[in-house]
Amino acid sequence: MQGGKALTGAQSLATRIAALEDQEAIRDLLARYGPLADAGDCAGAAALWTEDGVYKVGGFGEYRGQSAIRTLLEGENHQSLIHGGAAHILSPPVIALEGDRATARNHSVVFRKAGELWEAHRASANLWHLVRTEEGWRIARRVNRLLDGSTDARALIGGQRPA
Amino acid sequence: MQGGKALTGAQSLATRIAALEDQEAIRDLLARYGPLADAGDCAGAAALWTEDGVYKVGGFGEYRGQSAIRTLLEGENHQSLIHGGAAHILSPPVIALEGDRATARNHSVVFRKAGELWEAHRASANLWHLVRTEEGWRIARRVNRLLDGSTDARALIGGQRPA
Amino acid sequence: MQGGKALTGAQSLATRIAALEDQEAIRDLLARYGPLADAGDCAGAAALWTEDGVYKVGGFGEYRGQSAIRTLLEGENHQSLIHGGAAHILSPPVIALEGDRATARNHSVVFRKAGELWEAHRASANLWHLVRTEEGWRIARRVNRLLDGSTDARALIGGQRPA
Image (cartoon, rainbow over all chains, first blue to last red; front, side, top):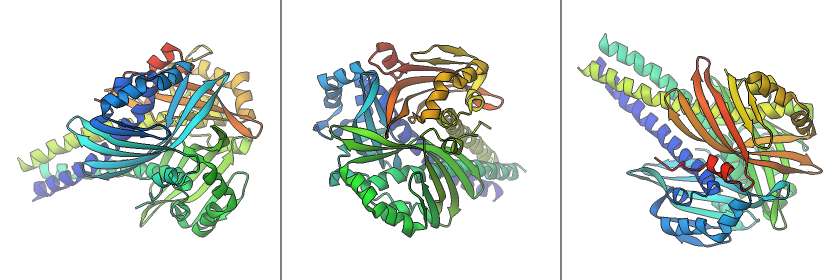
């Protein structure tokens, strides 16, 4: 009985540890986007998504699949940004786990070098749909909207009241 | 004996897991403020505090209780800010757990859309006093001071040397 | 056997918990830099490094040892910055654990009060080399480079593809 109880306790602990590991893995996944995007590691940044993952970029369009996301980052717009000096800053996310799926909400700000200073030329709301794959957590869909006062951008990060 | 040792081990592990869960919960609580404030979910943002929680806002005043905090966010100042385009960014906090109480220290920056760019119109130091309630961790008191060079703002986030 | 299995399970769980604790400790260590730097707690900020730790600051130079790092922060440049109003914001890091060593990559942005606003007068890439000491995790080496479009700054935060 004693050993049995301990085993049951270990299973319960394992479940709690797994939840912490999932949160850690998702936080890690999201934290990788900015550095990879600024480094110009376009394939690496695209690999944060699932093979058919979607990145909807406020003010631009919707990019479907790793290949399309990589092409976006290899394009003139992003390349001129990072070669001029840029920092893609993401804020700590609010993560909601639901088994093998999860959502995360946070802000992103893109700074661009302008003279001696860096200007915030984008400030956005982000809703991330994440999925557990055989390789680990990946982005199934990232919706990014400019925080320009529009209702739909604000709606993206609302409703996350504490449990 | 073997089973007994395992049980003791499981209790020790459970204590360590609980500390990790507390840090995760507090990080989650703080991460919710910016998205809820920008979304205009004023009741949701106020619900991050305890019923009689306090929010002392640098340059403004002291707001006591969820109702007063909600009213602050529903007011002209905050509403015009978010309807013009705003991002409340909070940095990763330094958390100190003390049983059912905790403190956290971090920065917050409020970006406001101005023409084609976003300007940082507030950069603040924050000291959060947190308390474990039956519903989870909540904010008992948040002190926010503008980082304008004043000694009291700087003192708010000092003294956090590593253990 | 039952008890033995539970013990084995507990050891496995302990290893997973230790990894989570290491990530938490490193995140905590990095989160302390900004608040301590802005507070003007120069000895406290320097104590985040090992005794002979190195801080290579983009656009400045290389500072070797806690004493040199403290002197840097006590110097005219940093002191006039924080007395005029400053916020050193660090983004959530990408952490890679390797036993008693670890690396972390993130962004830092330094805001400086200018009139009624705060300007981003530095936006940098950071590579942190961390080491486990008897007192806990400490910074062995921090390399900071301005994100001004230069290849070496971008290289500092590239290559962090998901496992």
